Image (tube, rainbow, N blue to C red; front, side, top):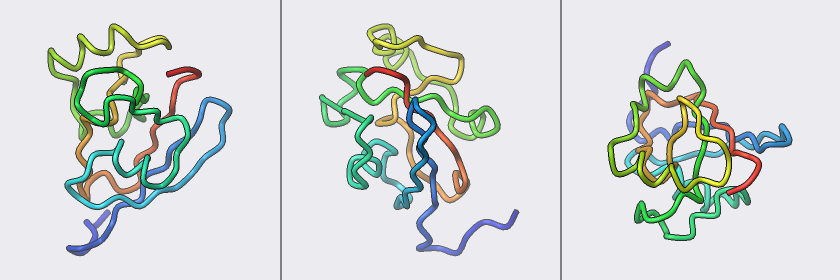
Length: 114
């Protein structure tokens, strides 16, 4: 798949725990949490506003995109310990996922509770 042109806003699908999908457009360089909150995704609570001081923007990244997103660093893993819902191998805080053109088509799922 060819990468989109510069200035293109990648489309990311956010699926809630009930299976309802919402496609959001996100500017490269923004965090997934910022884009989701701006788009009105209700399951991204983001109590700390992206300061990596809570786990209320927890998402499960689709397996095929996890390598592109990369694993959580030590501080993020520590915050994920406070997540209300189970943490999985593909868990990330959406405030720590930086949007790039190569994430076009990625799907993330929000857990049942934040």
